[in-house]
Every structure is written in C-alpha cells, then in structure tokens.
Length: 92
Image 1: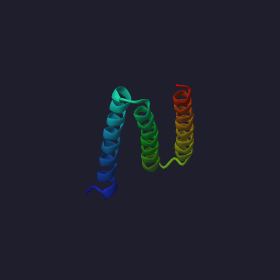
Image 2 (image 1 turned 135 degrees about the vertical axis):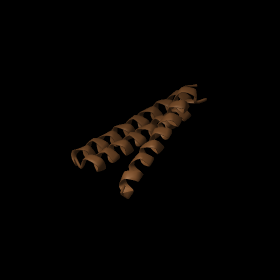
Image 3 (image 1 turned 135 degrees about the horizontal axis):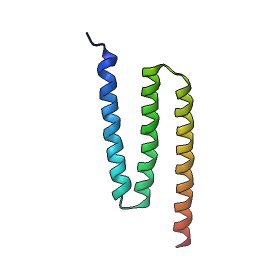
Image 4 (image 1 turned 30 degrees about the vertical axis):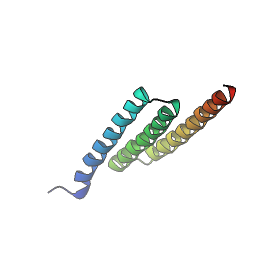
C-alpha cells in the first residue's frame, strides 16, 4: 500500500514542472522586461522548491544550504535587474 508521501511527491513535481513551463513561456514571450524579470524570479523560487523536494526524498541536509544560496542569488539577481531597468527608464 502506498503512503501519502508517495502520492504527494509526484503531484508536487508535476505542479513545479507546470510552473516551470509557464515561466519559460513568459520569459520567451513576455511583452515587457518587467514581465520577464518576474518570470525569472519565480523560476528561481521553483528551483528552490525542487531542491526542497529532493532534500525531503534523499534526507541530505546539505541540499537545504544549496536551496538557501540559490534563493539568495536569485533575489540578488532580481534586485540587480530591477535597478538596471529603473536606471534605463530614467535615462529615456
């Protein structure tokens, strides 16, 4: 008999894959740079979700450090891109 976790993990992975597909679509077809920026930020969050699921499955705690660093780098990249876009808009 399958446990709840065995049902839940594939559903979570499928949900994250759907989110990845939608983010990649928005990155490729976003009408503005801000739309692309938000999609890239969400994609970083989805990667952190994947790492969290892998951590739960494998039980290797060091992967949580990877998720934390990924989240921080994603956040810093979003801030840098936002600052660039604001500077670009002010120069117009």
